[in-house]
Amino acid sequence: MAENRKRILSGIQPSGALTLGNYVGALRNWVELSKDENYEAYFMLADMHTITVRQDPKEFRKNAMDLLALFMASGLDPKRSPIFFQSHVPAHAMLGWVLVCNTYMGELSRMTQYKDKAQKHAANLNAGLFTYPSLMAADILLYQADLVPVGQDQSQHLEITRDLANRFNNAYSPTFKVPEAYIPKVGARIMSLQDPTQKMSKSDPNENGYILLLDPIDKIVKKIKRAVTDSGSEIRRGEGKEGIENLMSIYSAVTNKSMDNIEAEFEGMGYGDFKSAVAEAVVETVRPIQERYAELIKNKDYLKQVYKSGAETAGRTAMKTVSKVYRKIGFIEP
Ligand code: TYM
Image 1: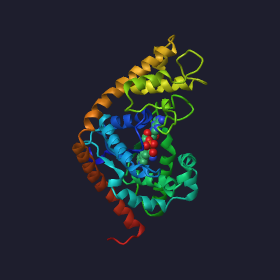
Image 2: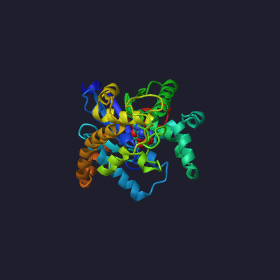
Image 3: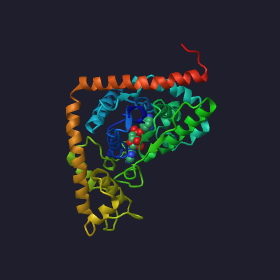
Image 4: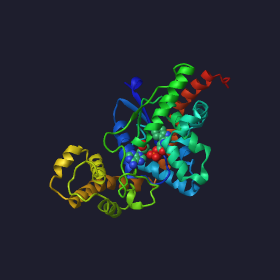
């Protein structure tokens, strides 16, 4: 079994507090997949990606440790799946550069995340923001990942990763596994609670638009009750009902009930009752995570042990790929 298990790799940036969108779109699925005996999973804190936007060092460190604790509080087991900081595994930078040299300017300039970020960070439009997808491809290809569980907004980055893998394999010889994105059917794109045409994001200037996993419970309830809906009264999907549909997706993700079942369950009920049910279900999911987080974050020695051993295991796997790549491109063996 151990030999032909499929590989999983995914990452989240420690760029601020984790949102319910990150949890529903990614982390929750990581936890499920990592329990499956058929998979061998690696989970990364993508701190090298985070510095494409200038960080306050103290806050950055805190966000990184918080995220590590939240990974485990959400149910990732470091004994089963290595959890590591990208910056602790030099192979990422090593393969990242090779892939930068195999990525076209044209394809990078078509990335929607780059275009978005270029607008938001016009004062610090650094080259890292532009070459970000090549580093992300390295993150994935280093581990010969079969599957990459992410939210919808990462699908373009997964496409370029596949293109780069194929390009390299064709130019040299088969080297990289060509990975597949694993995008959940429900919850792949959780929208802002204040503007359901925008993705839920921690960079939203209106804090009522997002829920943070570490928001106080009463705040979470208030944010859900204040969520923008529509002037109708039915709990169902449809044109003009994006706000309700978003709440349905959140409810579906945290209860595992299907969207059809939710429509049936709330037939004839009003938005107020539905919002109360959503709030209760979200709180039920978040509360135990917050409790485990509070315990974990106190135990810095344990957290350190986790990320150190994670980086060792990840580094061993990743360096095998780097060695292969360096040999194939013609670098003299050291
Ligand atoms: P990041 O840190 O922006 O987001 C982490 C994960 O959360 C998902 N996500 C969402 N899902 C549903 N609804 C939302 N509103 C929402 N917002 C975020 C994202 O799709 C993502 O899965 N580039 C990546 C980090 C990364 C990575 C990797 C991921 C670096 N290297 C290698 C996978 C594999 C990023 O910035 O994600």
